[in-house]
Length: 503
View 1 (cartoon, rainbow, N blue to C red):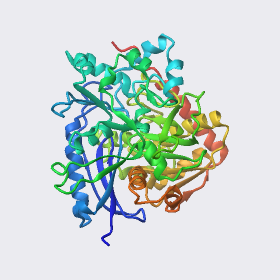
View 2: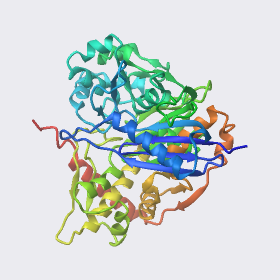
View 3: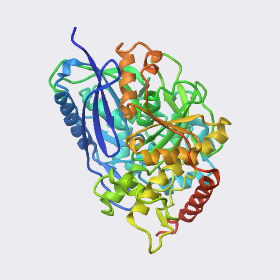
View 4: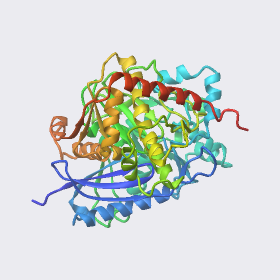
């Protein structure tokens, strides 16, 4: 019998990755391409959804050619995506009505602040598990409807669709037959009641979002639709059978299936998630309560999350914004060329600060510079900021749960940076474990699609495929660790609220 495979489409913030997985959970082939980032104003970030679709189709073709595979060899497709990014499109034409507003975008900070001033944050958090922050989709949708004449009326008439990137890709790949999303992505919109598992009418009324434009919410492992052969490689229809937001997909790919297990994904941003089982655990530390996934007809499962907005994108900024490096890989060599940070700290609040600070008005800060500061110290400070922010989140998580973290499972591109992983273990005073496959976001999407199509039997089988690549244990003296961390918090305090007084 011909061997079959699962295709995962990882629609990230700066690029699209297509990975083909075999039954052993190994990567058989891959394709990747970046796409255009638009920054029309300070704090604004936009994408072209049509470009994202075209890039996705291109890298899928590249992956199949690289593996010597045919589309007929694919048993199912899983999709994972940058969450919260809002796309609006015309249902009749299938075309976007404007650029997508990306999760990093800060333009709706005043709207969120107005809702907080009305005392609504606790009420919203009780229903959605989220805080009032421009990070989430709801206020982005409202902004788009308000800034295009006649668009809200068209949305009320059912002519306009909203979706996150997963929903957009399924809609187009299925030949515009399926307007769906999964529990994990719906839980990030600020519109979804995570306890009652429904679009919340009162939240929709609060934000003035027409219900007619929203996708149907379905389990994360489910056959939603089949691909349109005319669009997708001219072959037989292939089931689209897995959807999860990128961080929930990474939690699934890391085999964190038991309550208390935690992971951090180092990507454009970094996201710490801890599985809490079938109970939605409320946070008193300004963390998020989110749906982790729903598998078929099983009860949905939840997680606590700390979202760090800028980590890998700070390295990208060193490359593209400052021209300080030519490639991201240079940062590790630069950082290890000096013995320490020499008192230099970088607070990467380039789009505000996420958990647990939630300050949309914070801005980036580089401090401690002397005549002896070199680009190596700056590179080290940028990498160290990733580890400090991760500790901020995990300490808040431990205060909520009362559970001392035994180990942190780490993935994403920066998990292959030994200097960063060792410093992460040092500053956490906890073991850091990197799996053999660090593309766990795509792997999780593949696992979800494979379960729905019978490619894999159950989670026990998947957990048996998880393997350790590297394990890092703390090496730093406590006095040194705590001194570094105290100075980090001094720098964070100085960055706070910087943009609040802008005209």
